[in-house]
Length: 116
Image 1 (cartoon, helix red, strand yellow):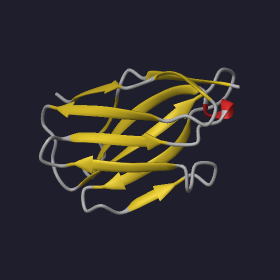
Image 2 (tube, one colour):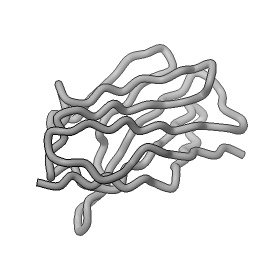
Image 3 (cartoon, one colour):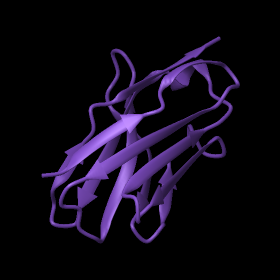
Image 4 (tube, one colour):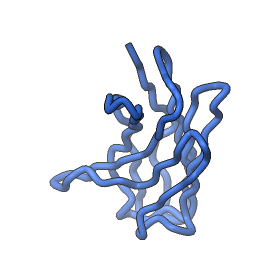
């Protein structure tokens, strides 16, 4: 079984930075893709950024130039460096692992709150 554990969320002022981490354990096969999603109160969960095991990345337009996704395949860890945070970035952030077999796993989420 696969487990994903996020950490690094918290409260930060607008303009500040946070770094999220997601540690994956279990039967993780390559190739795969990992990503960060977020869900604000009353809104649908949305994709923030994703990265393949080969290093290809995609970003939502709303975070381009401010967020950077990366991964350490040796440690099975995913990161999201978030700079120039805005109040509208406030949400619960979830880590997702997509295996090309079709299996999808989610972490429990970590709260990010940006105050104005």
